[in-house]
Image (cartoon, rainbow, N blue to C red; front, side):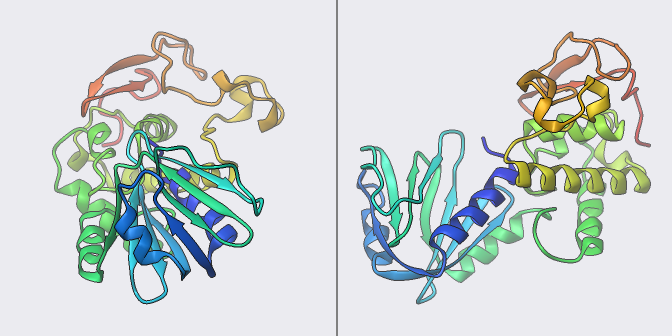
Length: 274
């Protein structure tokens, strides 16, 4: 499932390609035919992301809500004559200069302002959204303080923090030296602030680059990010039994919140973060 950096990147690139323009909308698959007909011929005023959710704002007040889930994909064609969409394309949005194809989303629906407000109220703070850092950090701290589940599980709860997925949860916990098994409510205030700051930094880097790269170049003997091989980009995720890039200890793995999590037992010792 795409993590928050990818969703915000979609919002930015699509906003630049088709935002502010009159859109021709259609549903080749037919499952969103009614919604596409309602949007067809109207101006797409803005595109906004919150965590893993996308909100398309249309002339007249309608909002299109999209959540890609596990299988959803976008294709952006900037040429005025794109290739035909596949039969499973849920929605096409075309301007005179670009076209966006959406296939396989978990959610593709029109919502009213009250539904949007309720949805956003269920989501935790998003490090990539504009707004007060102090307010977002305070909300993150309060959300963790109410949960006794491991911090490694809490980071996947979109009500705690919006946009984090399985890759980033392993990587930001490694980079901050926090034990993933530590109860979320037990994190010291300085550990919470360190975790928020590192998560924000990594998501911003990922949004800009279009991929997740969390290693410091010196830890893998590289001089430039472009020198990194695909298998050198991460510290912990997916590296069961491989040596830690910093201390050489074999990377550990276990199930947590129905997903595998990876960590270094030396760099993230038991209880680290209190």
